[in-house]
Length: 79
Image 1: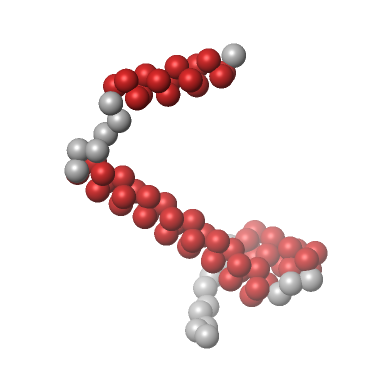
Image 2: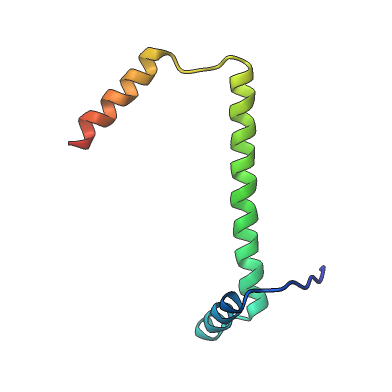
């Protein structure tokens, strides 16, 4: 396991301390949990963007008919 030190803004440190006390978890546990969730979300987003770029480079776009069908579906469900 690696050790890392970082500077936290006072309000982040205070929120972390309050949450740690309220949940009975350590500040380290909460910080690692939050970082793990953030990294997973960012990795997913980057993967999706890269896949979309690959599809765009391959010319894999929705047809105007597909776009109109989706728009019509949303407009009919909105009201």
